[in-house]
Amino acid sequence: MPVSASYSWTQTKEWIELIVPLKGTSPKKLDVMLSESVVKISFLPHLLDLVLDLTVDVPGSRAIRRNGSLHLFLKKKYANITWEKLCFEGTRKEMQERRKKALHDLGEAARKNHELTKAKLLEEEKRALRQQVSFYSY
Image (cartoon, rainbow, N blue to C red; front, side, top):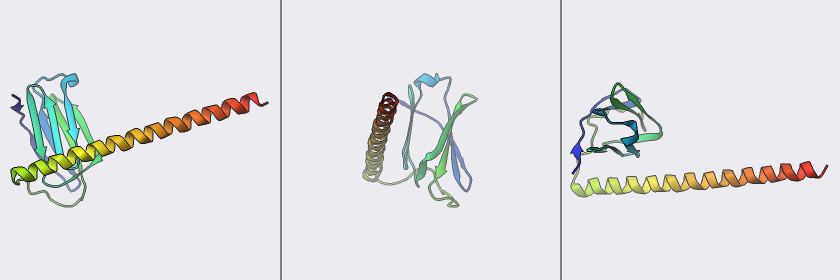
């Protein structure tokens, strides 16, 4: 059974900084999942699973490992709003719904990313073929 990890957090007008002591964990054994409303950090035997009270901008957020801790800089989706608390405090069902939506959103983002990558690769192959054809036609 995982052990709950400790953390601290601070905020500015645009950012939430989440600091998680990694207790000597190798970077290879660190797993971070971030969605608009869920932060999940696993470094065995520790697990941190937070359902955020408000939402963050995932592409604008960053993670840095510094001084034996993981520093997550979460860009607030709506700047200038002060978060009264980091974590959502709802019923078990509401928490499950937020987690379910987060997983669905992550799956959709991965699918779109895959499609974009596939389209870029196809376009690159077409461009290379055009160059070869134009080279041999002279």
